[in-house]
Length: 122
Image 1 (cartoon, rainbow, N blue to C red):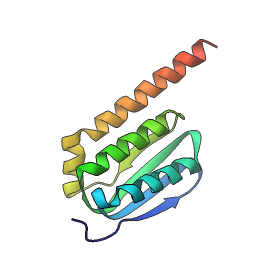
Image 2 (image 1 turned 180 degrees about the vertical axis):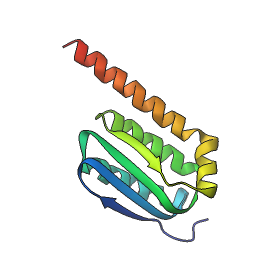
Image 3 (image 1 turned 90 degrees about the vertical axis):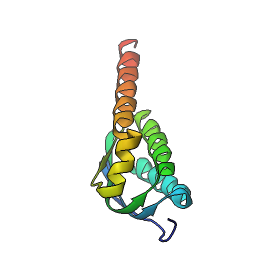
């Protein structure tokens, strides 16, 4: 499904940034999605939160899961929490089967423990 180009919109800056995604997210849109996530992360303060809104995503394939996980790891390295919201239908199915939420949670917890460990050694 590579019919419609995805659209992205970054809302806010500082401690809370929202990245609203719209359209179809598949292998053809991976580069655009990576660029949008990088931009949204650059607007997010260290220690802040990035909320990726999927309310208007019509389709998502597994290629997007890797992009989201890489973004979560980049976010976690800065203490930024990345969360997903608003998924329904097929999008929920892809996220559930790939266990991406569990992976995001594990990435976030691993980064927190690393940050706490480095703070204790100072």
